[in-house]
Length: 513
Image 1 (cartoon, rainbow, N blue to C red):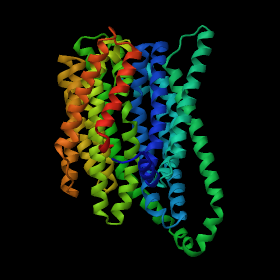
Image 2: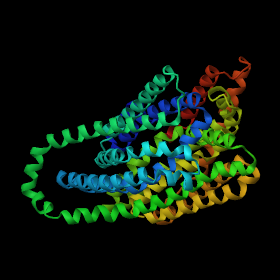
Image 3: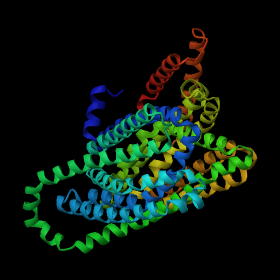
Image 4: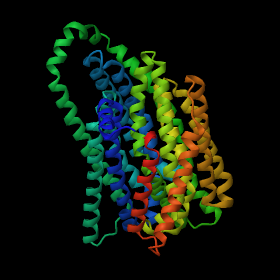
């Protein structure tokens, strides 16, 4: 048995574990704040208002895919590859990456602002989104700067600034929206989804200033070191600005195109959902309400435990990139196997929690019986989503971005087909079926590909069967014992039950964590 002291020592010696824990803490904090705030926002603007607010997310994701994601990833990857040689190259990658991303985002923001009427009428099919898109346009240049700086710090495996910026952005967003809604209510006006968009822009503005302040301070503090290193290494590098730009574009372009294609397909999917619900028989108001609850509350709740996995995936890309550049196949295999095993163990536990407690969570926390039913059904996708996230990051770290793109496109097309064919017949359950099936297929394809590439092995009983049996047996036992004392599953009873389940699960699988 490994002692607590050895655990702490291991964590202190592992950069990826420390970075993951820092990002996870920030991720959980922002998700808790965000989820509680979504409940507050739904109460203020209604489920229909939340649905209208959700409609602009596909547009935001497309803009982010074009202007930001490729540059952020390339900066992170190139920083990780050059930071151990000298700090001059890494900062130049950051500089040129920010400039290109910002200029592209300004163009995109202008187009979005000017074409908002056409987008609402012909793409979103909801004219009430017009003012929301105009407000959203102001956040795109800010997002580009913020993301590039975070990409640099991730490449350096310095997650402190990235983690704090997430919390700063979320707090600024929430405080701004609360202040705006309070002012409108005191003035006798009714809060609208525009309040949420303005708050998001405010949060992005504050987070960008925070990151810019720290990166400028970081560069100034290292200025003497840069001057010294320029004598021995930097002069030749400075002459190769075209090479830096070429490297950034070469890496960023396929990632951006891949993400853009996926974003377009996902946007089509998001736009189709409320319209297919109308074909099923819902009114426009009912369709937007169900859409808002499902994508605004239920799915974020299901993805909530994934903060740890997302943080791990974020740091896996530079780690795998470094191992790949050093031809460390054994290190890649070991990292992949351990990560895959942990995702299975953790994902199965989360799935068991949602399947077992989903209805109680929906009734107790969301005050919605249907939301609880959706949560029970969607709980099964937890292991597959977590595995997909980490395996995709590892494959991207190996430079095989086309593979993740093709599998992602295949899964999204399957979802779109299920939306068009199943939702008019089965309603929201048609969407849930397609969502679950496509995530399972994507995870399986990624696993089979990476198994062929680096010959990893996954022990079925150790990673899947034993954790699943353990989780469900513990939950049934704890629930039965508590039912002898309490007649109703209230929030305090549910909290006690889940804490007991978590402690027993970790204790029984302590060697796996």
